[in-house]
Image (cartoon, rainbow over all chains, first blue to last red; front, side, top):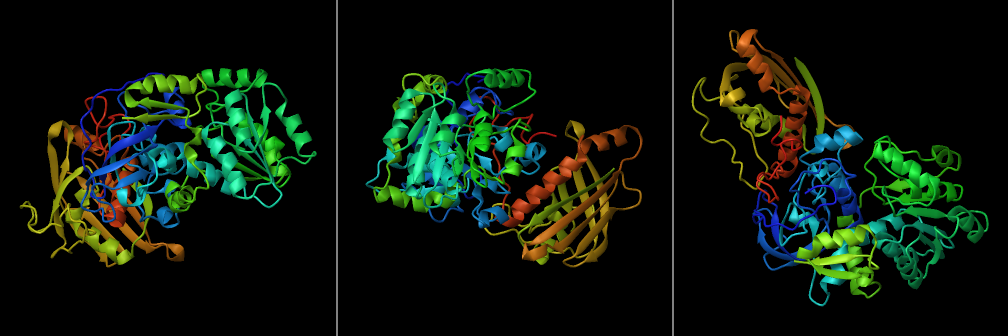
Length: 382
Length: 193
């Protein structure tokens, strides 16, 4: 309802509005780190009354006439990008770049040059679609945007197929890991935690995870990472030592625009943000670009909406870095990642620290954004 | 006032041309148009207009003669009407139309359908001109095409692309929200401008 103000209210039930819609009864949903950017007022075009939530799953209760591969009673997880399946980008499996799913493409076009796909519950810039932190939700293009889940898997095992597991996986794929590689990950939030696991899945030799919250660092270590607490140590120096002077082969920024950093740089960025001179605080990205070895890859799943930010473009150019980034093409990963879960290779639910009822969402947002109570990931059950 | 916009659509020039050439389809993606009829000048709408609810892609039917009658929304819930004719028609390539002499609204348009390079469908290039008459009626007409005619035309092309690629225009009007309106007057293209 406003900055730092989410409320749980009664609203009308969703309806089938387009032929390929389905209506879902939500059984589990979550709060995303990127929801906090909405909550804290960093993403423009929110309106009072917008329904949030882009990580959700549930039971199909109604299907539109155009949905051929889902029926009432199916249990599905929904991907956060809304994708038509027919356009140039969907056909290339670049689902988060769908040309037809953002009715407000005009806004994103003004900001970015061209519009990416519509997204559930993520401001009018991405279409103003009602999201899934709710009891019921309307899912456009349900035949493309959902994955069917059979019995034998709990909601908590599969919920994160909606966003953060594919996001971590795509971010790590984008690191182009080769045998013997060291990958450094900034941010031990849910995406960072899953990224640590994905790095080892995809053959990394070593993973170094960077954060300041003790339970998050401990969780990363439990997954096999070495960790750096950036409030205790100088990250650049530590990375230099740990990688024998060469730098990590790949660096992942799983932090995004609300980066926190000790010292003067943080206050510089917060001040500039306060007077709207700079919309993003790319502290993690700057460090990653400087620390990355020559010719390495910087992978950026962290969300940035802004127009400009001071990043070391000279480092990028002169070290010949490859930058890979983007909103996750979730639907592309449904099959392969569901398979890994079924095979027991990973249970993404390990990151869940809090389970709350939907009614408690406001409290959830609060403890998540303040990183209180050991909070790493909150799942809400309507 | 002149507007030029282009968009790339998955589909052969023939399909896109055929849909557009049945001018009765234009209001399905040009929001400010209420209707375009071709059976009779100043008459009723055609009986067998392609159904909006159909699951298959909409198919156009060429008109028998080149004349059409256009009705557009005007401010304060009124409408403005004029007759037009096709001035050039190169099948699968180009359609040009203009309002007849003496019409209240002097307007014309040209749409081109070109093969996109690399077999990537069709590039649709639209040019529209409006010359509103002077006076109160003119000011009203100018308003009806919005404060940002380029924007209106681009939105129209986006909707045309959706009709061609997925058979309908994706909408959010009617979805739940924690306020009276399901949409945002300020941001949502469907209800603004």
